[in-house]
Amino acid sequence: MDYIYRTDLGNATDMTTSGHHLDDLRDRIHGEVLLPGDPAYDASRSVWNAMVDRRPRLIVRCAVVDDVVAAVRTARELGLEIGVRCGGHSVVGLAVPEDGLMIDLTPMRAVRVDPVARIARVQGGALLGVLDAAAQEHGLATTAGNVSHTGVGGLTLGGGMGWLARQHGLTCDNVLSFELVTADGSRVRASADENAELFWGLRGGGGNFGVVTDFALQLHPLTGPMLSVEVDVSIDDAEHALRDWRDLSFDAPREGTFAASIANGVAMVGFVWTGAPERGRALIPSLRSIARRPLAERITTPSYIRLQSREDTVEGHAIRRYWKGHYFRALTDDVIAGLVTGTSDPYAPAVSLQAYGGAIASVPDDATAFSHRDVAFELVAAAGWTDAAEDAERIEGARRFAAPLEPFASGAYVNVLSDEGQHGVRRAYSPAKLARLTALKDGYDPDNAFHLNHNIRPTAQSKGQ
Ligand code: FAD
Image (tube, rainbow, N blue to C red; front, side, top):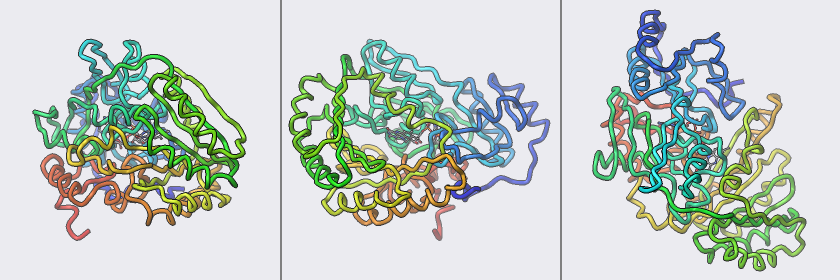
């Protein structure tokens, strides 16, 4: 069942993929062209969310930047929808176009680290785990998400939240330059002093402006063990525990990121500490005191690499998924009451909260396209199941949970949007930023060739919307 994953802006024509075009493309590229029936075709089109089962007309597995140029030009000539795949973790599988051309960047997955300049050069198809491992070899790191099989590409272009963000900013705040292939097949570089407006838009504006083939990321020294503290309480104690946990988070130093969750009738309150563990341990007594009747306590000191991959299995592939997300400027008592009540629904999703603030909020709002730097917490409501017969109930359950909280929310994180369409885009960006992004789109992609994303529509397509 294609419940939510149809794309609404198809521009593919009836033109068939002629043998001539295919032979020409195959001759020109270093990578591979995959067609339905080829042995590697199914593996390449399958993504994180097992609900996504779309069949591109062709997949171009790009090995070098010129392959990306050839793929973009071929798609444009044939009038095929373009999907861009890095880690394949878009919740609704936006990377995979039905009957279109998928640009599979996963062969371009290398990361090179210059330990003296503290810069990582990351190819457009790299996963977070590769970045973390390469940087940690030199005692370095930069902000990356919490699951190592997520792609650097999608995560960075939408913002990039992780355990280091309160210290060092979002991943997009650590980008020094982007190299990309734009909608007309041109190669362009964007940095603070080259195509500065594009540089602004790529830091939060998603995959709207081109295919990024290289990210230069600022690294920071990070050695020694991290600290993770989690205290479980029963759902009956969740409301007061979450209120006290929220209050405790207000004074947290930047090394501490407060996190909480509710799943299967158990609430967890805790934090992750990315500085010297002994300083983080000072927070433990206060955290303990808010759990009147703790069910369990977990205090661990994982390496950074272990911290970054500890959720890899629970957040693994081959599971059907649906997400909703909200940003809260204030996690009021009403919001806490609403989310605890909401989890009593038999089809309620698992809920997680992560604190923002610190270095994220220190970056001036107009410095990047990423919006909502003033939020206190991000909420993700994530449903996961295996039986396709449950699709409708699970999706409705997540929607039922999230809808009553929306009036309290200040917006949504673009990378957590699923099937909200333009309503979601308007939640992700302020009107002023959306106008600025639209002007950028008009300049770089007026035909909206890159529309399989949380789409910034060019003016010509947004009239009358
Ligand atoms: P893909 O599906 O490959 O790409 C998603 C979209 O990004 C594409 O449709 C395309 O528009 C664009 N894109 C990707 N690469 C490129 C490129 N090189 N050039 C141009 N466009 C590109 N987010 C956080 O901030 N922090 C987290 O801790 C976090 N954890 C997550 C954990 C899981 C298990 C999942 C599923 C998601 C998580 N996210 C997190 C959200 C994540 O940032 C988004 O899902 C993001 O889109 C994933 O990027 P990807 O490259 O893996 O996905």
